[in-house]
Image (cartoon, rainbow, N blue to C red; front, top):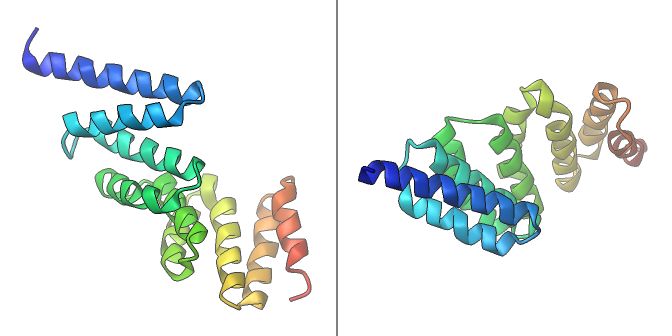
Length: 163
């Protein structure tokens, strides 16, 4: 087997192991495996983008938005603007209270129908946190109209109804 094939096999094995650790509720072990993937890959390889995205997701799940940020930024750059990563980046920035920075990423994600309701709801929360309660309420009503069956969005509109 050539060195390149050995490396590819090792990277696939590390990714498989990391996913198994994640499914098994062992996020710290998964983080170690994904970091090893980063050590073996280069920019331009999908496995590197995936490892950054998964590391960000794990850090967010562990409540560590600060550690998720560099991985989200790299995943965004490597993917040339994947909207799911934009949504994750916006969510991480909201968690950190960096509402001005979150806005553009959330609006980018909102341009994709599958992410629109969540991105707009987070944008409404950003507006509310910045003292723009009336604008937040209007946006929340729009989000609730887009996702009428989702109680979280209806609750958001109700929470802001007095604005």
